[in-house]
Every structure is written in C-alpha cells, then in structure tokens.
Amino acid sequence: MKVILLGATGMVGQGVLRECLLDPEVERVLVIGRRATGQEHEKLHEIVLSDLFDLSAMEGRLSGYDACFFCLGVSAVGMKEESYRRVTYDLTISVARILARLNPGMTFIYVSGANTDSTERGRMMWARVKGKTENALLQVPFKAVYMFRPGYIQPLHGVRTKTKWYGAVYAMMGPLYPVWKLLFPKYVTTTECVGRAMLNVAKQGAPKSVLENQDINSICRDGS
Image 1: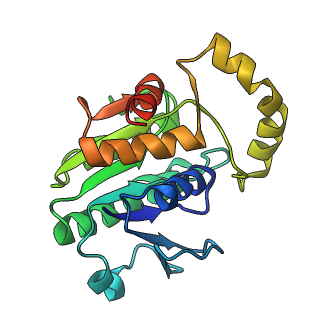
Image 2: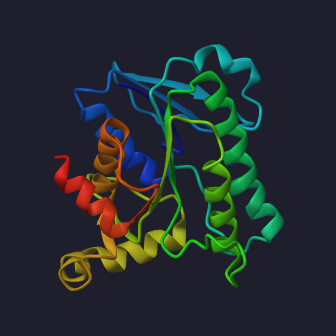
C-alpha cells in the first residue's frame, strides 16, 4: 500500500507516520507539508511546500497512491471564522479534489474531531466548519471517504504537540491517562491507536463514513 500523509509534523500526524513506517504492508509514504519531518526512512519521501494550495508543480508525484491520511489542522482558539475556514475547509477540499482526480481509487481519511456539527448550523464555530468540511469531502469522488472524530488523544512514543497550551494540558493529563481510560473509555484514545485504525480502515474499509472515538478504538483493536 502507498500512502500520502498531510500534517505529519503535528501531534496526530506524527503518530500516524510512525505506524505507517512500522507497517510491513505500507511500501511508500509520501509526506506533504510546510516543514520537513526531520526523519529518514527507506519508505519515507517528502514534499515541502510553503503554499499547500498550489500543488500544480507536484502533480506528477502524486499519482499511484492507495490512501491519503489528512491530519493537517489548526486550533480555532483566537481565530476568526474566515481564517479558520480557509485553513480547515478551503485547503482540505482543494487538496482532496486534486488527489481524487489523480487517484480515483484512493481511500481518503480526514481527522475531524468529537462534537463536529454535521448540520453546519450549531453555535460552535470550529464544529460548523469541520462539519462543512466533512460534508464536502463526502461529495469528492474517491473510492471511499472516512471521517475520524477522536476525543482526547494521548500522545505516545515521544510524539509531541506543537501548540504550547496543548502541551501544558498533555503534561498535566498524561499521568492521569490510565484513570481517564478506565473511567471514560469511549472518549479517550492514543496517537498509536489513531494511526493503526487509519491503516486498518484504508486496508479493509469500515461500516460507516463517520467514525467516533469509540469506533476508532474498536477498529484499532480488531485490526491488530
């Protein structure tokens, strides 16, 4: 299987990249991002671009892939809706349409979030925009499209967030993760589990397009 990964330097993307490189069924991983991962691996290939809206010069390198794991995203804290929509909706759909044209047999997996608003009419700005993005992706002509809606994600294996205040939260929550997992198993997961679940869905599919945190954990376990 050949995989395209966006957002590999973010917390979720780091975990997904790790699982891709460990999986013997993955023969090639193409990372597209604004910054290099700093990793070297025989499977790993990278395209570093300052403007991800313009992939035209790279289209010759984007064909022949089986799956795309879209882990690119930003926190909505302090952002106006127009700016958040540009990064979350406009960029995602722009990339998805190019990849669908070049790889119509591709499975596209998008990292959304728990409580995303599929109606696009709720009070939470980020949830409306994420919902709009999900709905638009379902209309892009891929072989299959899946939305991952994880809840709290515990970083493992040295994975770290780039967002400072997230880092403070994880530093506080990390030691308590076994407790949260015991008390609220439906609402917590790990970077490792998200990555494994993505690979399992890309290989085997899933019974529904929107996968909540509990679904992600189940697919992670059942496919391992």
